[in-house]
Length: 282
Ligand SMILES: CC(C)NC(=O)[C@H]1CCC[C@H]1Nc1nc(Nc2ccc(C(=O)N(C)C3CCN(C)CC3)cc2)ncc1C(F)(F)F
Image 1: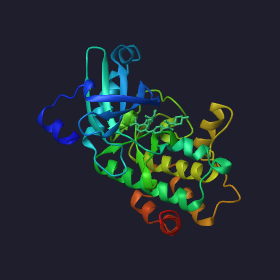
Image 2: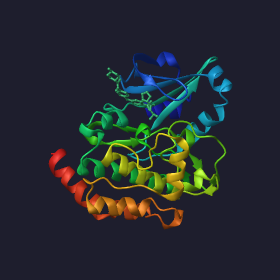
Image 3: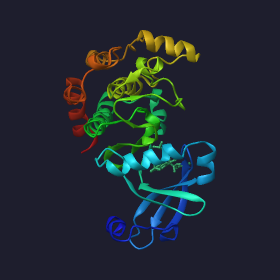
Image 4: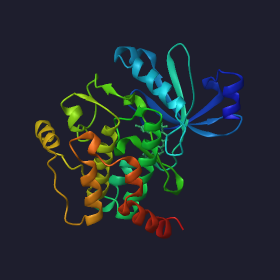
């Protein structure tokens, strides 16, 4: 129903939805749980004031997020179901992630980290999402726990394509949020390609297993220095196999980073996903 209506009559309107509890604040606006009145389908409603977008020169970013996300379709990419606007606001109707924001789940873990089976199971899904993005010549550029949402049965979906671009590209905007995930070529604002996402996957794997990203420092300049020098250490509890995978992703030369297909096939991923399915999904 929610799909067919979009195809037939292009225009949804806010009165088609009952607005429920606030889910939190996104980058440009507020997000609410909402229910489509006819189908009772639960969705996330992202509401943005046009005035705020214009003030923050964000309208092109929202346009790109809508453009890219409406053309991507993958089980591990958050679906933008539809969008519409009225005189004051823009509304995005997105899939509702029942289990919420992955970074909150990560921070709620003992030692703020996942065990190896969980880390591998989540990382494999992110790698699959990125492999699909790259097949559509889309670079996400902003892989981090804050941009991952958790659904039932431990399904992870990549969201927030506000920073994604079509490959290859030159970084124009200043990044907002954490700098911990920036690869060396973006720190030196050179041209870059989709391999920036392979780097970020290495940072994500490290943070899943350690509870903090590898180059984290109290000073921003120190973080940039460590990133440029690829200077990081493994924690004692990390298995040899996980260290191998991370070391093949956190490489300065973009094209030498492990391709996503090899990440998905890596022994640490294969072994730990099998353990996860056997122990956590039954
Ligand atoms: C990727 C992007 C960068 N992030 C976002 O957009 C964020 C910004 C705000 C919310 C989230 N956006 C979404 N969140 C959900 N589900 C969800 C979120 C939070 C909770 C939760 O923990 N509470 C309500 C808790 C429940 C307990 N109380 C105490 C605190 C709030 C539960 C479910 N589904 C879809 C979206 C989406 F993306 F489609 F909009």
